[in-house]
Length: 401
Ligand SMILES: NC(=O)c1ccc[n+]([C@@H]2O[C@H](COP(=O)([O-])OP(=O)(O)OC[C@H]3O[C@@H](n4cnc5c(N)ncnc54)[C@H](O)[C@@H]3O)[C@@H](O)[C@H]2O)c1
Image (cartoon, rainbow, N blue to C red; front, side):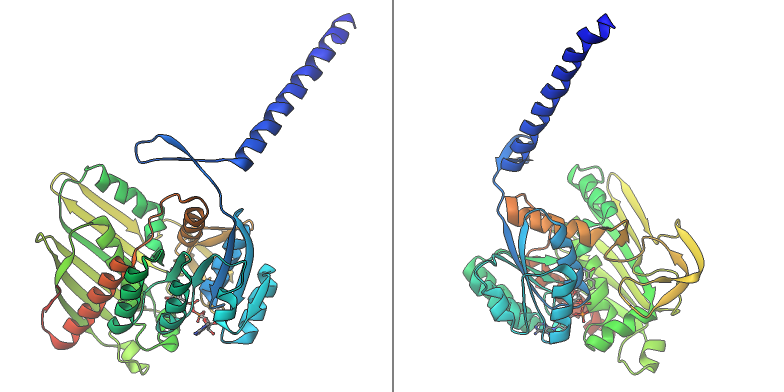
């Protein structure tokens, strides 16, 4: 009895002190944001509130908007789409502050200070050029364009304006590839002398891409991620020569002038050889709901093999598993975590697009560097993918400057 009357005030005192410390810590972390420089030194950042305009309210625009809504720095969202129903639907879904069919009206809202262009591949150029003129940070979905002439226009204007433009090649934000990049940066592979990557997906996703645009082929629209990935992993060693072969089959029979399988050999500036392959003609109900990939890196001092097929996570369900990307597609056997953008889990979105979106918003808000592709990278990646298609078509080796 006596002891408890002595200890009670002491106990309350400790609790109130801990609470005070917690409140002070919370206030500090709201006022200040810490980051680390390249040498591991802690530096202080200020946090900017983001007003985000999203142009294109389709699948990826919707995902970016949902992720932006969850980001603590985003205080305002405006969305647009040429299709008013799509824009209004997205605005309602995320509780956007403004929507319109006019992308300029959305981008020039006084609250807006960052822009995401999530239109289809062949519709990037016009809104992207308009966005660059406003001088805000811009994120555009991959590929930068489908035509080299469009990509040149964007690159030239971005260079003239010293624009803050990034391109979303989300493989750069898949953990296994980020960790591979770290091994290369640490020099554990030595000089990379060769590499390979092959990418498989079901024909259902191929038809969805080609329906959007006949130029959005498996090479230009999907293998592009691995061309970018190799360019990022093997930095400062650009592809100079491309030779490729392809074979037509089921996709051609469905009315598209596109190969079922394409294999390419790329030669880099220092002579390193890279084998890239893609097939988006796997059976409609193939268990992957996105990329099935393998990536292998061969260096003078190390070898790194990445199994990205997701065959280690198999689920069978008689009730059908939904596809993040194809709303009417259901499969009974699924490789979990094979969805290219990522997966919903307990109300959160996990995976490459989630991490990439957060990284770009963190960058816009605090200046913390991000790993997204720059316009020069994206321009080169487009050139390599178009060269693969040209080589497969003509049987000739294509040389890149
Ligand atoms: N990083 C990834 O994982 C990933 C995955 C899929 C797609 N993408 C890329 O995202 C982009 C969009 O693909 P999606 O699947 O969302 O396409 P989508 O067809 O689902 O959506 C595009 C939307 O843009 C609208 N639109 C078309 N032209 C427009 C314009 N000029 N202005 C405003 N809106 C316009 C369309 O009406 C449509 O609603 C493409 O570049 C694609 O390659 C990236």
